Amino acid sequence: MKILLVDDHVLIRQATRALIEQLMPRADIVEAASREQTLQRLREPPLPGWVLMDLGLPDNRDLALFHLLRRECPEARVAILSAQEDPDLARAAMDAGAAGFIPKSSQAEQLESALRVMLSGGSYLPPMLARPPSGQDLLQALTPRQRDVLGCLRQGHGNKDIARILGLSEPTVKTHLAAVFRALRVRNRVEAVVLLQKAD
Image (cartoon, rainbow, N blue to C red; front, side, top):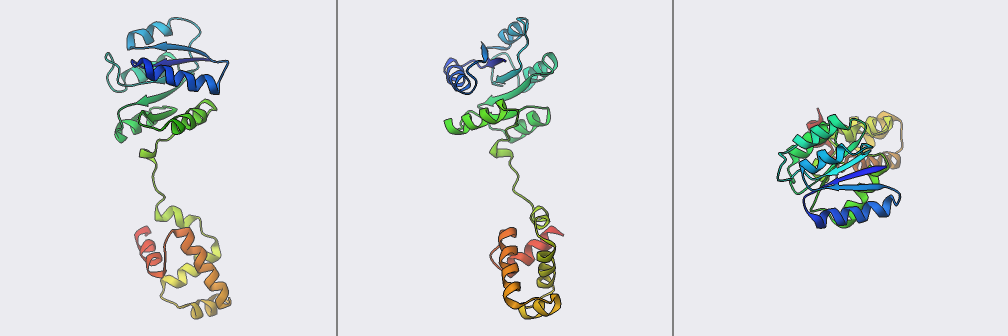
């Protein structure tokens, strides 16, 4: 596979190239230090199957070169390695079809992990875009019986009443409640009810 590295910093290109060569020893890696050099590389067949590019080139603005690469190499996977840690920019790139958005401040292990994911066909979502699960997401993970117990809890019933209403033993109710608290990432009944109210 032909891989195109686009970055105006020689050291960044060298370090990234070394990582890719470890992960894909047979890859044909070519480099470009500017928008103009990138266009020149595109005129040298075959087209790259994978592009890792920096956005902060002297002759590029934001996602302009990214969009051009997406048009000129529709089959290529294009990922971004950027010094700009702007969540809006990262989100715009991912929404436009980027295979990943890697902040240059990433530790070497994070960079290697991200490259490994993307080179194997996956997408890398940067931590800045990772959305914590909502209350509704957490509730979806409960079993039907856990939802029954939670419903009784919401109505203000104690463990003895919940056991009677659902035909369970009190120890079983306690076991279900402990599992519910873990699943909802709360510590007690009050926090569970508050989360339920927020999820409504």
